[in-house]
Amino acid sequence: MSESNSISLPTWSLPLVFALGSGLVVYGSTEARAEATAQEVIKIEAAVKKQAEKIVANGELSKVNQAQIVSVVNALKTNSDALAKTDASLNLLIQTMLKNQQ
Image (cartoon, rainbow, N blue to C red; front, side, top):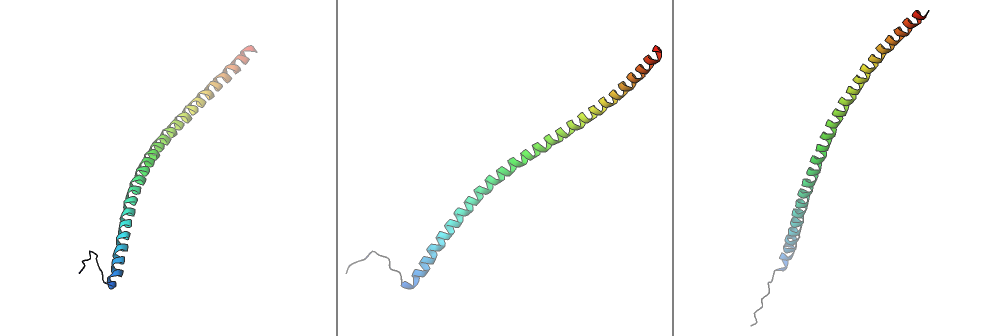
């Protein structure tokens, strides 16, 4: 007799073997997709943190700008008050000079 080194499967088990093979392929692709998704989540998380830091920095810059604007407005108001007093003083001086000329 000749000995054969082949594996023989009953024909009824072929659908089970194919189902098992396709199940393993699906499992492998699912694992690969999960790994890719995890890496993508890490990248997105880093981008969101970086953007959040920029937003905070811009918010603080905005607060500084707002404080500077308030300071300029207050300085202009003070300057305007000083100009009004100077104008009143000059007006009084001119009137006094005109009275003295007559």
